Picture 1 (spheres, rainbow, N blue to C red):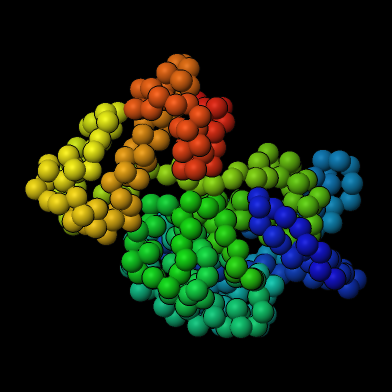
Picture 2: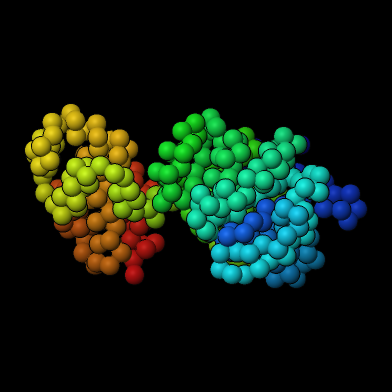
Length: 348
């Protein structure tokens, strides 16, 4: 039986549990590889293994575990994580016949090096996808899914800091780097580093229903829905390119973002036509100069909201806007939060 459910604006197909005696129906396999984030492996393992256990114990109820969780590696090798922690695997991925969910953790080391060193994992990821498993990645783990070709033509997300590299390397993927979680059929991706718990809770809800996901979140003191990762992003990631004139304009805008700016003035600054500057700026940053300026103003407002006790109107004026309502719409578009919500969440 399939039940439609929603989580953070996503439509999920939730699976009902069926037990055969003491056998657990749903098997979760976490794919291990060297230079992975240890927390993305052990944290997800804990959340899945303790769903239906921790909360029930706290309430004096008999625990009912919902998942069997294991770590799989090539040749059942030890996982040497980025923080030097070594984790034993339970099974060789070559010997894994079937799993309900295959989870790809965060890549902690050099992305391109780790991808090259783990190309032998790609056929196994594709094999379990073809066998009907749910496939999920956390953060930069999406690069492995993209390398396997599973994200072509699909919406996906990854850490906001790797968005530009991801887009250039996988142009067939519809990257939505502002989103914390994406879902496309039975493929799930989550954003930056610690988003593994958002992903795990979403998948717990998919398999067990909303009540189990909610009690698991409560037991581990986790917000069930955190919205977008855009609130955590930095405009600095847009400067990793090789166009010196565009970089010069970016640096000028960073120093003068609160002033009134005309595209013709920016073009004169680097002896280009407005049309040429727009084209090159878009090519280098995936934004036009006005969009980049808006991002700078939002970034400045975020910093003020984190540390200042000024009113929202005063902060908006400081970053170059007169109309609070229009800036609030812009701020929410960029971060997924209103200025007041952002201040409540991040004020130091």
